[in-house]
Image 1 (tube, rainbow over the protein chains, first blue to last red):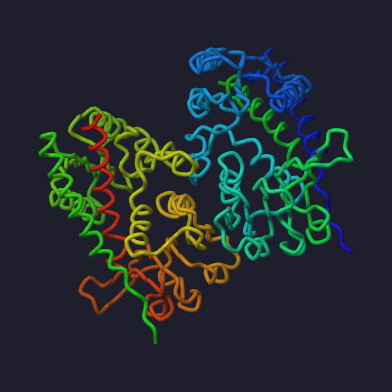
Image 2 (image 1 turned 30 degrees about the vertical axis):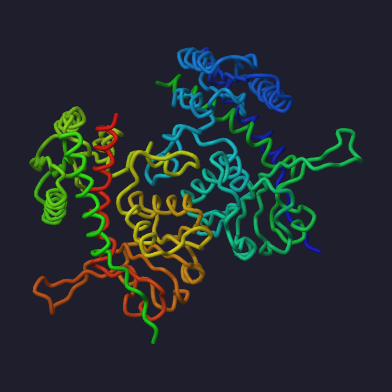
Length: 294
Length: 294
């Protein structure tokens, strides 16, 4: 039975982090300054805390200064926005990341739209998305997870130009922007979503599949074209009584089945996840470089 | 031989213009003010002059005040931008349209990005495109031609949700934004372009086709699924010695062939063209309404 080449996101992310660390070191030598990333967390959600501590640790490893902002659950929207404004003005901060979700009494849209476009390392500002979409325009920052998906393809030697790419899911943070990136890379792009009547037959024509639907094991081996490149963005917790935690993470793709059909395949975890953090560091580095060389 | 239902863009546009005229009249009665559209032309290109005079005439017919700005070919970029700023400040102007192309010594991107987002009736500002792309966000103005395509479908009773839609072409002014509009309307969207390896087989799966490639008669009858809705945005001049002008306009779709296969079909001219102007009037009306009711 043929086996897919497993795309080792952890190893690729490690290579990228090494490249970033080298660049940070040389920036520090040339300008006597290092890039800074403000990571803002509101409240005490366990999952958010774990993401945030991962991001802060990743900063430290490559020499990026992490500016830690921990705000209480009860803080008002105005106070969060005031903090964002303060970070916008802080010359040592080159990127601002507000960990989502925010508590219900705070509008995420309002808070995110207050982040200076020059420090929007998540790349979620509508002006950035518009420039991402438009031919001949480039955003200051590409969203991290979509950018990570493209990096995985490129660094695995998978060509994108002229290929049929199918994106499953159309969220603002993954599906939509990754479609726009693939289109800019000259793929023929189809976006499949919950209203699509025939996802299987569309996915079967795809040379490249980006699965970002948030549906555990939704995509079966039989849905895939032989030799396709499959990037699985899904990170779904499913019950697993054999684990101490009581759950394990699975992707949107049935890995065991896909492994027999696909040409390339990312695992979950260890595929796209580590790339998201690496791209966040890269965006912060790029933001700092723009400032230092102004 | 079955024949497609011809979508009469001219008649639908006429209905919309009548609706707009009624609204302008009632605005004028309630607020003692009328919407105003500034139509800016630089230089003396024959085609641009003809488009501009058509737009100005269309304004007059529905009671929108047309503010005519005719600038000489040799004007500097700074002077054009100064004129745009003046129109941004003018409270009688609710929409600003700069006819493209501009002379080579003037950057279109720079000039267009100076138009106030609240008067960007063409809807081309990247912030508008970003909001068009994003779920849960809405732009102040949708670009006119894409909006016209959707109106043709809706007013012809063609449902979009869950249908396979294929957009041929990915320009910033038609292909890209019409894809985003179809996606927001819950179609499954594929964007086909010059690097697509198998356009025919993709188009053959489409329930809805928006042809905006600028390639005369590129799409043959045999490329279409029986009963498909075909919106032809192409307006290509081809030589025709039997005409006094020496040319005639044809679409991106082979009309004679498509007419035997498609369920619905727009003619060229008389399909999308009149809708673009009607949507420009509609956007100007909407911009004025937002101001009047503030």
